Amino acid sequence: MNVNLSYPIGRFTPPDVISEEQINEWIREIADLPMVLRRTVESLSVEQLDTPYREGGWTIRQVVHHLAESHLNSFIRFKLALTEENPTIKPYDEQRWAELPDTKNMPIEASLTLLTGLHQRWVFLLATLAPEDLQKTFYHPESKETVKLAKNVGIYAWHGRHHLAHITGLLERMGWV
Image (cartoon, rainbow, N blue to C red; front, side):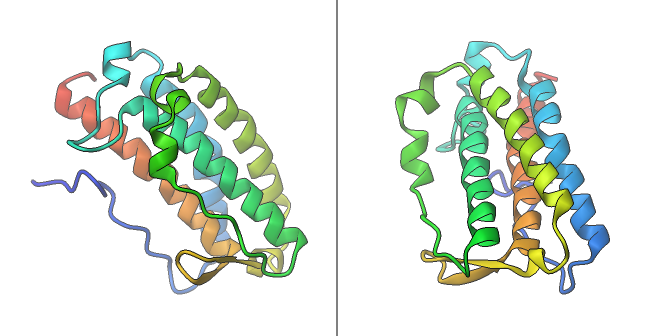
């Protein structure tokens, strides 16, 4: 079987109707990610952390730092959408961020800790939202898309699984598990 190393779980495809049950499942996935990620990477050596998950891809270290950065940006986008009328969010160049010294060289513990606290806050917020809150939106100027918060919950549940699959796929291919 030939796995797409860039999208090992496929691209995010939202359901036609996002039910309350679906939202709750996505919130559980967001809640679980920090613990699952920590268990997956905590025993890796420096050499393993600095191994790209695919040719031309980020290292495991960069993926861990990226998850913290990306999810922090998403949390802020949620807060903006909840407090402003369809705000235009600020995109960022994640590829250039991944090349900065802290992302390429810093130990991963700070990002694992950040992700844990951030997800505690995010999950608390998500669990308190009314259905009408999940219909609030933000505008993404790069994709030119108005994004509902309900869909964005799914995007970030998928995003965590997506990058976790990058890491676990590499661990399996290298025989490190």
